[in-house]
Length: 130
Figure 1 (cartoon, one colour):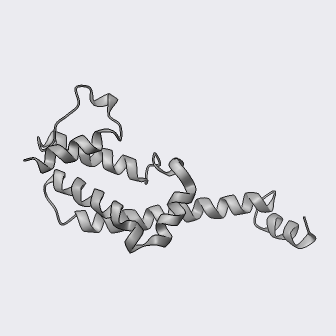
Figure 2 (cartoon, one colour):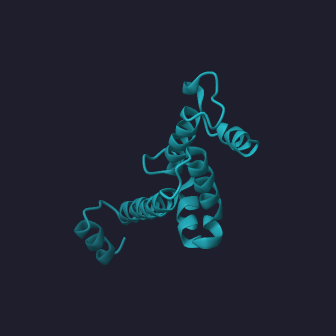
Figure 3 (cartoon, rainbow, N blue to C red):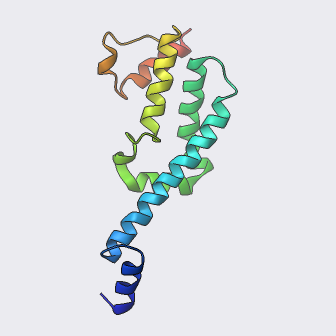
């Protein structure tokens, strides 16, 4: 490690340059999720039906690659670790599905505690078959 990279790492509060890179990447992921959340919330706010909210959110997420490929690259690089974050994709999908279940718009699994991302296709099928 050169003296200049040591100085940068120390001035940034990092022990190493790779630690600084990791902090910067984590901040990029948080930023992307915040932008996604704000976009998604603004769009789904137009819908009253919780099943529609889920369907629109699901479609919007699927189309991100075409609309904002830079955002998707950051999320893909972070791997599966981004899914369970509070501001991530899975908690929002779960919240939307549960709201649709509570409204009687999609079928509920026998034990809601066993819910997982595998419930998404079943929820979508139930919504579109009505």
